[in-house]
Structures are given as structure tokens and as C-alpha cells.
Image (cartoon, rainbow, N blue to C red; front, side, top):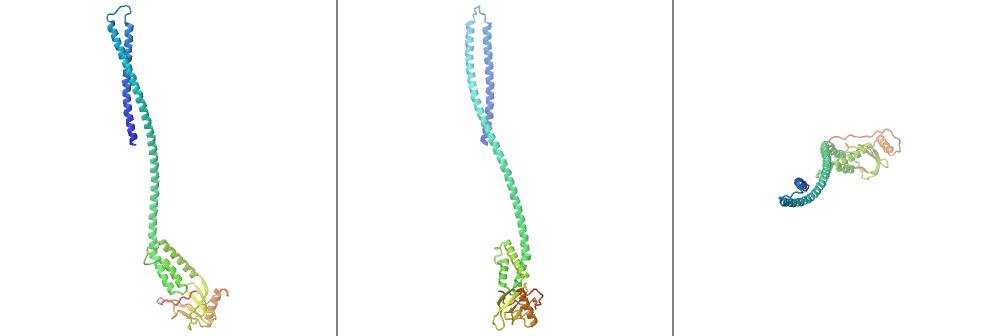
Length: 309
């Protein structure tokens, strides 16, 4: 760009010099015209017949004027030649200045486009920064909810599982541990992963609370025979079994000691328990049954062995 300005300044200087030379050339042409007119006028007014004693002197003056005229003509030709050379050079400089001006205009247009594009990118980056700030605010809110509500809920769930019915307790505790995370490295699990595990745990516990099922497993009896029994579960609070020979039956109760299993010996409760198993096995139609269910006290110790399959 500095080269273009330098060319433009040199072009202005050359234009000024050319104007001066043009003025000098016009003055020389005017002088030459006056000289030619003077010579022609002298010849026309000279007396042709009479002999002029000053004729030799006049001829000498005419010869001198002729020489001066020729000299002026030579100077005029030289000035003309220099003028055309300078004119050609100045036209080339003008053309170069025009080309440089066109290039500078193109560069200016491109720089303006880049500036507009940079402004749009800056606006996009600013919008992203604002979005990230909002996400940080949302993250802080979620962490507050996680600290104030979810974590205490998960801590209480451990107590509920350990003191609840002995059904797949270890599997449920493992699922709970995945939701709580490692207490020694609390920052290793992201908040999104922790909430995802907590959601999966809650959904599985909800499914468990709404479902019922029967399964076959060994049970511990007083004589340590461990016969096979048909267990049934209703939600998270009711669990019972009846042996395959139908001679022994029990209901899980947090108030029963020492194994939290309350033996069922009366004929009527035993029939109700057998009906519950057959209904869940779909060997009987749905009907209302009455089962002995005990409510756990607040200061009762943990339950017995896991009776899940």
C-alpha cells in the first residue's frame, strides 16, 4: 500500500513538471511565430528597386535571425521529444496507479467481508458462552438438588434394603452402589451418570414394588434339612414360603426372632398362604386372601438371610 502511495505522489510530481514544460513550450512557439512574422514583414516592406546602403547589415541580421530560428526549431523539437517521452512515462504511471487503486479497492472489500464474518463469528461465540453460563447455572442447581434430595434418599434406601424382605438384597445393593458412586472419589462419576444410575435404581425398585412372583428355593428349617419350598413375593413388604410337601410354611416378619421368619402352623393361615402361592402360579383364579404381615419397628435390628433365588 505504501508503494501505491509513493507511485501516486510521484505521479503528481511528474504531472506538475509536465505542466511547466508545456508552458515553456508554448512560450517558445509564440516567440518563434513572432520572429517569423517579423522576417516576412521586413521582406515585404523592403524597396526592390533602390539600393539600400544598409543591405549588407540587413542581410547579416536576417542570417542571424535565420540561425536563431533554426536553433529555436531544434530546441522546439527537442522539447517536443522530451514532452512525449515524459507524457508516455506519466501515462504509464497513471495506469499503474489505477491498477493499484483497483487492487486496493478489492483488498478493502475483502477486508470488510472478513470483518463482517469475524463479527458474526464473535456473536456466535458470545451466544455459546451465554449458553455455557446457563448450563453451568443449571449444573449448579442440579448439584444442589442432588446433594439435598437424591443423596439422602439413596442413603435411606440402603437401610430399607438391609432391613427389608430378604429378596435379591445383594443385587439391589450393588445397583444402589452404582447410583451412589465411590465415596472416596466423589468427582470421578459425573453428575449426569450419577443421576442416570439413580434413575435406573429407582425404576427397578418401583417395578419390584408393583410386581409379585413365585420361585423355588431351599429354606432353612429348625432341623437344618433345607427342603425345597415354593416362595412367593408381593411388592417389597410381603415374602413367604410353603414347602413342597405342604407341611411347613412361614412368613417373613421383622418382629420375629431370631431368623425373622414367622412359622405358620394354624390350618386357616396355612390355607391362605397356599392359596396365595397357587394364585400367583395361576392354578387358582384371583381372590382375596388374608396373610399374617407384621410391621417392622423403628429400633428393630437387621433381617435374616437372603431368601431370594
